[in-house]
Length: 455
Image (cartoon, rainbow, N blue to C red):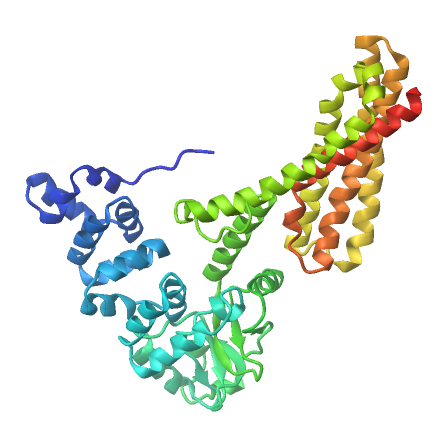
């Protein structure tokens, strides 16, 4: 992985107080550079500063520019900075944000703080934010943008254009504009080029198109993103149970959800547990609990291996050569199982593996386990025989390896499929859980096969 490239603004951190106060020539030059930089670069600089410096720098930024910088900060930093601003500054920042962004920010604050900041909004805006807060953060309603301009089906082209021109500074206007009736029921959509191409007196209901995809607000965000990807749409309307228009999910929201879900899968596949925030934003106590609970459980599971080996202690003592290849067989079995598990988990996550394809996947992995197990057993037989000249031990070890690889790949396939069937995230079945499970099962298979063939 390439190292992260630092922006030129990061160099200002060494003399940031001079930049804030503009108390020297280099401070003035730094301030000029800062105000001309992209808001994302200034946000990166703010992330590296102390809380006092963050407040001092942010409050001196031009208002519009500061709002753009604030929108690009990490949510934890936004919450901390917001609490340091006075009422007028906080109101100015919050009113520049979209309702869905405010909901995400308010999740970082306690109830008293949320109640305090909600009072800064007008009644209608406050009601919209409260409604969004009522949705599950993991649902489509929890990620949708409600600050979207819509048109009525009985509007003419001329009237629609006038509305877009008048309201566009306050509400976001996108290429696709959704159309509702007077009861706010979603009925279709139009595009901006259609408004330009039709005559001013034409009703938009005469040329509006149907929505190929509509998402229910209570639907899981991951399922909503999967549908958007399947249909190849850049935005999708979100409605309630009665098809009342509530907002839209955009391509930016899709990217954010994919990143979030991918991070969750990586954490679960690594046995880290449930970590919602980034590494530095996660409290040490939570990190300790989430990581240790898995390690303690896997430690206890791994201890079963010693019980199995104690049962076959006499056989292992008689055939010392078997212990030399124990780690090789366990490692190979774990790797083979993780390969199958990774492919299946990804297929389930992307929707490539559906219910109708479960049997096909199972049979294919069965065939591959036989082919791969056969290849590895032949190689291991040759290695043991050439290095130690013991044909019986070579046969026992190679036969054990075949069985371990076969079972490991089948478990790597079946466990994710089973978890997915019972609505449990299949990522839980990946390493290190599968590797530890296969260590226990692998030792049992190894000792049983060798005991049978060498007794």
